Amino acid sequence: MGRLFGTDGVRGVANADLTAELALGLSVAAAHVLAEAGTFAGHRPTAVVGRDPRASGEFLEAAVVAGLASAGVDVLRVGVLPTPAVAHLTGALGADLGVMLSASHNAMPDNGIKFFARGGHKLADELEDRIESVYAEHRTGAPWERPTGGGVGRVRDYDEGLDQYVAHLVGVLPNRLDGLKIVLDEAHGAAHRVSPEAFARAGAEVVTIGAVPDGLNINDGCGSTHLDLLKAAVVEHGADLGIAHDGDADRCLAVDHTGAEVDGDQILAVLALAMREREALRSDTVVATVMSNLGFKLAMEREGIQFVQTGVGDRYVLEEMKAKGYALGGEQSGHVIILDHATTGDGTLTGLMLAARVAQTGRTLQDLASVMERLPQVLINVPDVDKSRVTTSAELATAVAESERELGSTGRVLLRPSGTEPLVRVMVEAADIEQARSVAGRLADAVKSALG
Image (cartoon, rainbow, N blue to C red):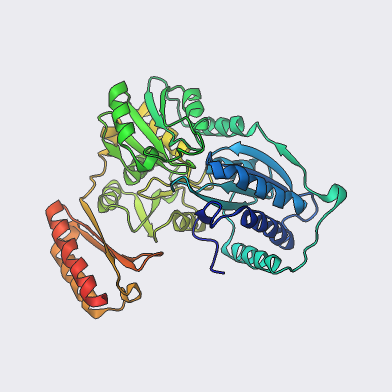
């Protein structure tokens, strides 16, 4: 059995890769592993379980709840809520474990399981490895202790979760949103009730699209991966800005009043300046990945804000933030982590904070986002090459060095082997798009020659 846990939990096609049996087995194994680790010592354990609106989430939720209860864990079933809401409630309710069923921005047929430890934090890698190991033991018939009588877990719906989470979001805002008209694209996903309620309570006039999930339409031509509908709606309604979430609402992208996209790098830049102004940007530092646009780095340098880079993936951003005590980090894709108020990327919180900055300054989002200039970025995937030799090929190193000399201080080259496919990603940034395309094309040819 290959490793089940990826960088963001266990994912696959529901009822093919991710079956009810797997969901139940992993939940039992998680309960046993946390019990072994002493998490449940001295009290009756409790878990918070939530999901996005995918049809498959209904049977997978039932399997997870059954597994946990059969292992003696009481379950608070919070229903359809965003991933960051489940993380928040796990901490706020003092639960020992949180479980979210979602495949985020993936298409509807997929689903996933993500576990949170006490406090709403991601499980440590060693605990995930142990869960896999215990799950494998149970599959081969190894006996496990099953509680009986009053020892089995009890299950109840926790309907207060939505209101509790919304109150938290509105309560941490530095100012209200009165006077703003905002279009929200909920991707027919987990935030379809939470996000409109939070923005409305904060004082905004709200227009919603993509907020009628039917179990089958999540992420379908809408949300943060398909911004065209939001762009059109913002212009049509004369809104001040638009906010787009993905299926589980752990990310946020935005649209200004003209219909122009504002990506995760620009959102980070706006929030970094806002947080520094109110002395909330610890160490005057923001954390982002190596895929962040060079324009973001140059803008932060100009504004006197330190920029720490990590590998690609919000988990690496979060690890760096927690290790060094930084308050703000994120990715170009819209995963933004505001660590004082969330333990994971939170799209609704990010959108609220962005709107709060617009309201507080009286400036347009277009004006605020102009703090950074997005340099043209070209990405080419080079398939069927030996990606393991990216860092050791002398021929490739020479080609990269030549490209970097040509681009100078206003350009950048990044070669990155794919984590899941036999290909290398060539990314080039330059002040001029034609130069970026030319350099990227030559580097792609060099990758084929050196690694093919």
